[in-house]
Length: 300
Ligand code: DON
Image 1 (cartoon, rainbow, N blue to C red):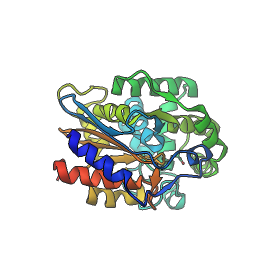
Image 2: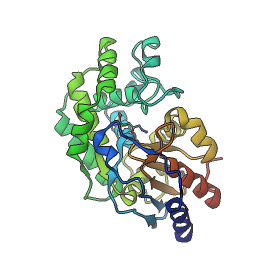
Image 3: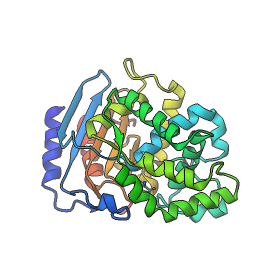
Image 4: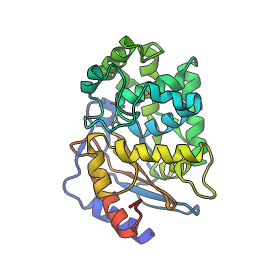
């Protein structure tokens, strides 16, 4: 395993086309595109890494996986009255389907759906309390204490979150946002600004493994369902392409991270800040394609 990860990291370091770093959040535009890391936490508890695996990065939309688990913990199946479970075939921040579908977002991983899960998880708590619970969940999942929110990134996103505000207000007009959009957006931008290293993210993904020794923070059935949603919706309009190339459930973020779950085998995190045209890590996707091919880890 270690040799494979070193080989993947070496190939990534030599890549000419690294994709384009997200620049719509000014703080993210400053990230050095030449970084790359991959970490694997195996079902039996071993940890393997290569590259910049101890450098913290902004997990961005990968946080939607943790918040979905917490929102389901809060309201259970009732969540599905407010958000669907179908791929959208649209970009992560699209507003297109929301009008046609009366303010019910297609799935919890596009921005509109994530705003609903954040609103649900927030409930009647304050953003500070909810974010505290989220950080405790991520720390418990990874068994790592040193995981924090980058305030500068949260502030930078909040100042430029016009589209997300539009989505939130639109859903509020349909009665599908219970809290004030300002509170929801404040919480959402902070959850996206959680920073983790590749090693920490691979360890945190263990809460979605259904194997002996994996953290039991959510039920077995819920793990199966969250994995299914990652498979079908985790990469936005690139979800089909990721499933075709990698064959494993994954969730990407515009910080360039991808969390991938190989049921029964392990949790994999990869990070390279440059994005492809779908807004998913370019070299991260390519690395996962090589990883899945070489290990044979696949659900198919
Ligand atoms: O809502 C946003 O714009 C970001 N904070 C998160 C988007 C994201 O990570 C999309 N992922 N590929």
